Length: 354
Image (cartoon, rainbow, N blue to C red; front, side, top):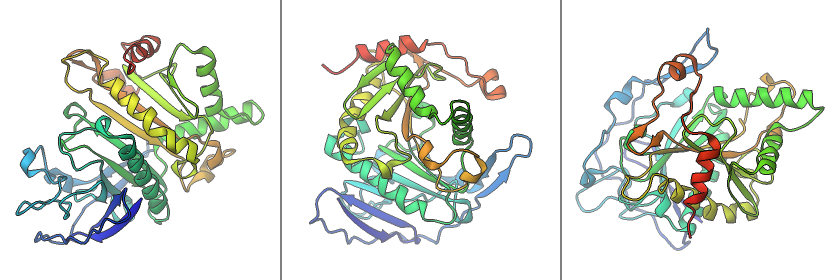
């Protein structure tokens, strides 16, 4: 992998990740952009104990532009985009309309391919491996920022999810705090460790799923994917490396090499869940990594007690119907799932690549 860092016209950082070492990236951003100005603010909710990002400047972000005006396609001729060069493999840049910025953290965009009409599932294993390298490198870089406590790499796919740009891309958030979801996991892990005299909750969950087997979707030498026993979403898969590590940086070469094959197979199965002729399945793919700071609030656990894993889920519950977060989910955070996890796992096994 070759990494080339440059600056856009408004001062934001942009990094090219290339699979070939002989690629030269020297195109300048020719757009007449003013310096970026954001109004991101973190506010603490005294009742719930969580934090909310207030980012009013995002009201003016780019919204469903036509394909020939896509800001994530390479620049070509007189059409200038966020990527100055005329081609790229993988590129990462600071979001022009960030939810988090400055002392409130950092937001980056990750473009998986220059092909506007592709999706992550269309990538080759080499291309998917390069994306993994980019996720890992950005996790390392953002972890050193004083304003960042936790790094979150994720992809939103599909208009139903709320995606405003059709180009295949994801995002990376550097939060200035430990997110509520991760905090819940760490507290559960601490309680399990104390109750079992040192046992690891993540290991326990994975061992239970492998022993039961009914919710296993696929398993390879270094990775295992399953629908969790108490899945919140109609089709939800958790992907774990078999050797527990706290973050992407700690993955060994064997797991890194095998990941593209396993992950691409999962994504392709997601697109086959509802049968031929259905539009692409909307999904969220979310990497869960241990925080890089703030662990002192979780007495009894360390970073090494956390288990890196990816959660992949869709809000589509059946053909033409979505799972909405209505009264119980949005009002009380109690999920009601219409699809039994065992049924979801069986369907995801049925649509395996031949």
